[in-house]
Image (cartoon, rainbow, N blue to C red; front, side, top):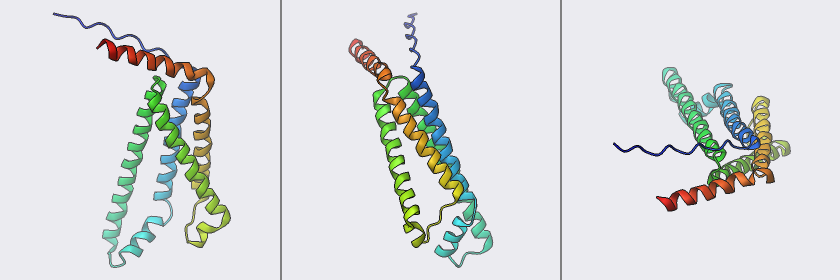
Length: 176
C-alpha cells in the first residue's frame, strides 16, 4: 500500500488579506440583505406583477410573489456562496481571484455611483423609479466596504503573498 505524501501546510494569509476576505463576504451579505429588504418590503413586486398581468386573481398573485421571493433568496444565497469561494481563493494567494474580485468590486462601485447620480439629479424619479432610504444606505455601505477591500488587496505589503503562491503553483505543475 502506497502512502500519499502529506500536503504541505498552507501559509496563513497576511492580516490585510484575511481582513479583505471577510470584508468581501460581509459586503456580499450586506448587498444580498439590502436586495432582499427591497424585494420583500413595499409594493414593488406587487405593483409590477399587477401592471404586467392585471387579470391575475389574488391566489395567483400570492403564489407569484412567494415564488419571486424564494427565487430572490436562492439567487442571493448563491451570490454570497460564489463571493465566499472566490474570496477564499484570493486569501490563498490566487491572483486570478484577486482580479475577479477587483472587477466585481469596481463594477459594483461604478454601478452604485451611477445609481446615486441618477437619484441625486432626479433622473430616477422622473422615470418613476423610487429608492428607499434603507436600500440607499445599504448601497452606500456596500460601496464603501468594496472600496476599502480593493485598497487592502493591493497594498504593497501583501504583493508578496500573491507572488509566492504563483511561484508555488508553477513548481507544483512542473513536478506533476
